[in-house]
Length: 104
Image (cartoon, rainbow, N blue to C red):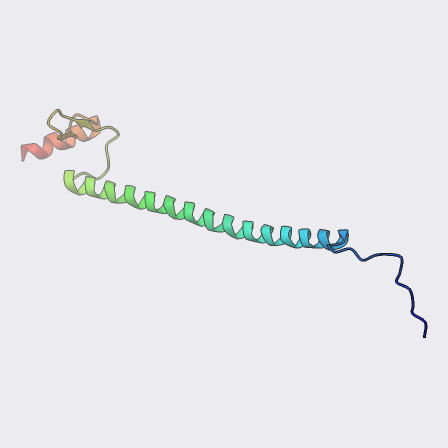
């Protein structure tokens, strides 16, 4: 029996160009999906930080209103040298309210 000679093309180890392009395309698609998920999580974290900031501001305004017995926060607050808030002189609208309440 006669042997068939090997083909003139030698098989080279490695990837063909098509295989390499397919792998790169798959990696790009997976990275795009991952990036979209990461951006969604990042956006949600920023939103939660804003909600927390608003909650903290609301608590601060409520505490201020409770402590000074006012219905709103004045536009300015002066701090005396001893660290006490001078609300009566800070806003002319509230000054009249404070003067009347101190008389009683």
